[in-house]
Image (tube, rainbow, N blue to C red):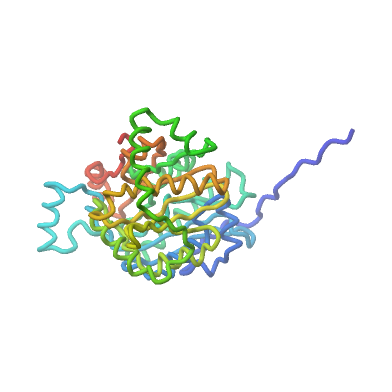
Length: 382
């Protein structure tokens, strides 16, 4: 019997060349998505973000090319970053604000950051033909190039946003070699759809939670839910709900625009939807979801805080999304970052993320290392 032929991947002969692009269009959908197979937030999602006109951000895309092939890629952004963004309300944050009244740029640094402020995690993409043992080499090349690029953009602070723990473990050596410090970021909550019906899911919860959910689900009798793939005339109302929800949040980084919401549904046609929640024909909540065949990601739930809460709309949205996953064969529901208490109670697990940073000035870098625990957003133990 003849032996099966072994598949061999030719090793690139040329040295890797890192490049920066000012639009993801310059890279192309096929080349980008080849490096991000299995990622829901792919080329089309990033293009929608790029075209959304989000104030205060400049978008960049870093690639490492070998023999004409994009072997590694990562989105990036530039902004003026306020270090107190992740501080909880309290004495320290109030003190910072008092200083900023007289010195507006206090604790604000121009930042060049790998990752995206609008995606769930900082994914580092590699072409599938790149062997595992070569990934750290390509990432180190990308990191060195990005640091040099940051200098040309007058960014003293370089960072990586929301890197999952598995990626941090795999690529930690280049980060350590380059002197990056890390702080905890908000973990990602997710729930495997390993049940066939909602009743099966409820049976997996504690008796107290199950009883509470059955009571809350009675609100469906008063709430009308529409699954839509466009916003139509409701976009201004959705933006009002978005700003109401954002103003109640402890952490505010980017401010999304109407073009962002419309762009996601338009660019990710067939892979996104928005669930609308009406009471007596009044829109009280909206929930933007992106997905592929395997994972659904809850991008933003926005609600009229005063009028929506009595109808348990957050919990209705949770079960609406689970039903969507069941109906479409989606095996994981990723409910995003923050507000973990309810998510854990509803069976979610958490994956830790980290932010990495490095200041060009070694003295300031040591100082940032000392104070960094104050700015950590890690709530994995919530």
